[in-house]
Amino acid sequence: NAGVTQTPKFRVLKTGQSMTLLCAQDMNHEYMYWYRQDPGMGLRLIHYSVGEGTTAKGEVPDGYNVSRLKKQNFLLGLESAAPSQTSVYFCASTKSRTPLGYTFGSGTRLTVV
Amino acid sequence: TQLLEQSPQFLSIQEGENLTVYCNSSSVFSSLQWYRQEPGEGPVLLVTVVTGGEVKKLKRLTFQFGDARKDSSLHITAAQPGDTGLYLCAGGSAGGTSYGKLTFGQGTILTVHP
Image (tube, rainbow over all chains, first blue to last red; front, side, top):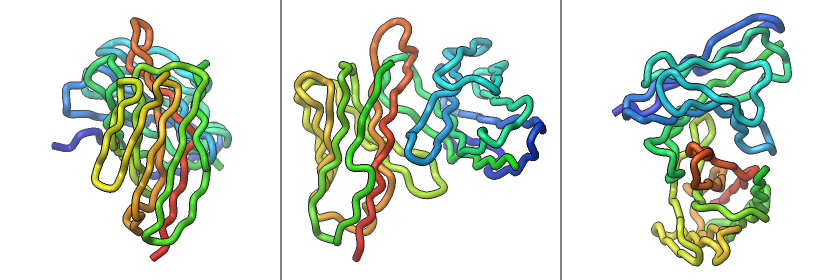
């Protein structure tokens, strides 16, 4: 059972470039989330989805877009990367809206130069 | 906006010592979770507590949810080098618009020296 798989694991972008981070889960979870993790700031919610075809903004959505065309996949896009988006990005999923625990992917370390 | 304050931010101890990590908020949460994260990996769920005053034990780890469901603590007895990692608390709220979202504390970096 793979759980939550994130690709790529590492990426270096130049300022202004675009990219898409892919998150795939095989647990049939309805709810999926994208977080960014920065030193001393914990995990901050970027966008989330409560089911196929739905997306919503989290705490820090600016500069990011998301799509959930299939239940198992949640894509995070950076339209025009900025150095402030240098971070570690985590995808997570859970079965229901009752917050009993997330399954996280192993993360994508993104550096924008 | 719900906030979770986690303390201490850093903890460096010797093998065999005991330690406690605290997670505090002015908000009430319907559940409180603790995660452990190792370098290069995502957080892994250790425990979820949902009832005020609840205490759960996981081997040498003891988790407690405050009576008012605004705070929690993680106590490790006789720490071992394998306990080294980043510990995160996270609070969840029930209700129609919560959608399973969690509020995370800033984390506690624990280093246990042999």
